[in-house]
Image (cartoon, rainbow, N blue to C red; front, side, top):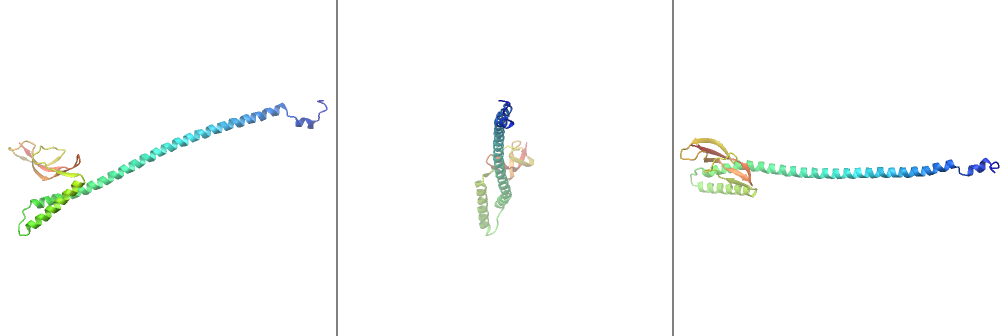
Length: 183
């Protein structure tokens, strides 16, 4: 029978050699699919990791910008308040000056009103004055401008204040300019 079979008849019957590649192709396709799936999972994990990192970086950036904005605003307010202290000092000196003439009391009352308003404004912003006279000199709070022999005073005692010191909460805003006694 083998002799009677024509080449055409043999072409329709599958050969053993041809069955193996078809089976191998199917295994190869399955392996390719598994490899592709692993690659996609790895890429997904990489993108997810990248998303988490970028989210964290953005959150850190947002916090840093907000902190810098607050610090800039605080510096601006501090600069303004520092400039205002010069006006307060001038008002304080004006109140110490001798007023003469018939309008002296009216003038003094006006200056006192402005002075109290300025101090209230500073107080609302958390800036409070402190007096140094009679205290021991503290370089963290006072700026010594002059020292003077004073046998009746303690060595290092503040005997005169040229301008008040100011605190903002627990922080020194401006040191008091003072004269210090030497024994």
